[in-house]
Amino acid sequence: MTGPLYQILHFREGMLLFYALVIGFFFGYVLYRSGFYNAKKLAGVFYLYDFSVYKVIFTAIVTAGILLFVGSKVGLIDFSLLKFHKSYLISSAIGGFIFGIGFIFGGFCPGTSIIGAVKGNMDAVAFIAGLFGGIFVWDILYPYAFKGLNHLGAIEEKTLMELWGAPYLVLIVISLIIIVLTFPLASRIEKKFSNK
Image 1 (cartoon, rainbow, N blue to C red):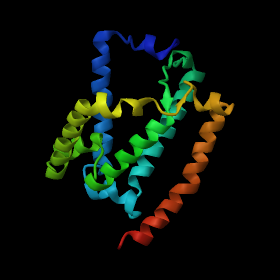
Image 2: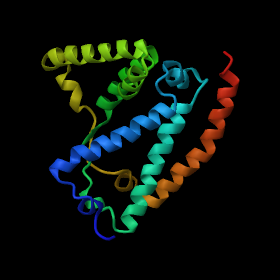
Image 3: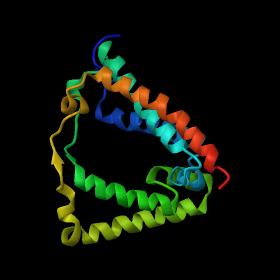
Image 4: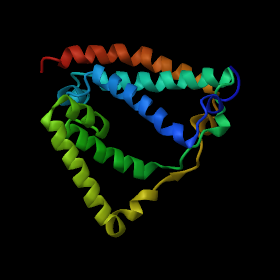
């Protein structure tokens, strides 16, 4: 099997929805199996008694990075075809702060709230209602209050490889080192705070 992956899988318009559904199904299954339908488990990372969110998300990022690297080496993925959106550091920091506050108080993020609602958790249903309410308010107020926040701290459309001048493999190795160093530390912190 040779050639870029998008040619092999025939990414036509009609097939894109199918691939999105398949990927979404497995993504939801992993979230469910990780226990991410439980608000207490999700919020645990903020209270230091459960680092499952950190471990699962970081493992997923590193796994995707390794698969991209291997795929590019065997000719399945062409990095030149990957699209990168422009980043706005200040806007992202403000949005991340607001997102974090919502995560702490609500116990869910938009994706995990769906898993929780499917599980039958009414707190997840309430979170989804608040989510759509927030979207509605944002949409109304955006032209008057928030429009200027969208483009603060713009940086070029570059990857970490380009920004740091580091080869892709080096970034993967650094990520693996972070896992080796931080996962055991996270487990020790969990044990210390699990009964509090």
